[in-house]
Length: 290
Image (cartoon, rainbow, N blue to C red):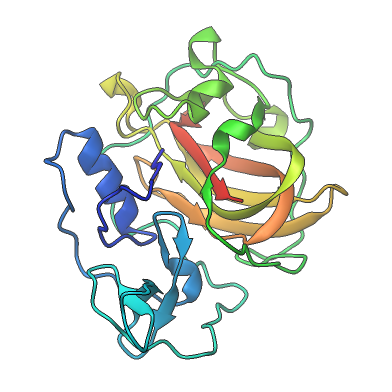
């Protein structure tokens, strides 16, 4: 699920490009940086490299990261070029789907519908959303300091599973060839719900959901995803502190990337409009924060 360490080569990554770098490694690409098109950031939230938050520098729209080797500026781009960074961070406006589903399909495959198995308990009826798509309720706190993959710290629950071969934990097993699959829409076509939760609050910086495009069973790679997903983060008081809707209108489902930057104890994915009438799911969920 994209676990980067300080020893990882300093490849340029972005909301769209890091998935390509990851999949290059999965497919046996030679060591080193995978060539990708130059990424132009829109806000500081787009700039995360090896767990370190950066800054979006205008007018170039290039990400810069702390670099003590750059005398005078102390910032450099992912390729090592020293740049001057303004004192005021860039800001993303409410409603801006920064880092949402990337153009095209970086996975090269789609989510396929194996009978999702889960075994985990239901999260209960899927909550309705009164907040317009692309907006958040509650104020972001901003994750300070290095961030890391905190997915293994949590437990998952799902509203249903297709069968025991597609349990909920398969969507957090760091394996893009396995998937969780629900048993299809609920009564009155209600959404499927996938929940990740922890006992103690974490500052949740990034949430990534990847479809079934690399599933080991090729027949499951397409037409077993969803048309949209609502991502919510809840705090310890069970209050929604982040909410955003993303379109998944293609098959396989495109990667979904959200940047909550809020403190929370639960991430909920409300997945609507199954592409298949009897099941639907995704391969991996990754939560990054500190």
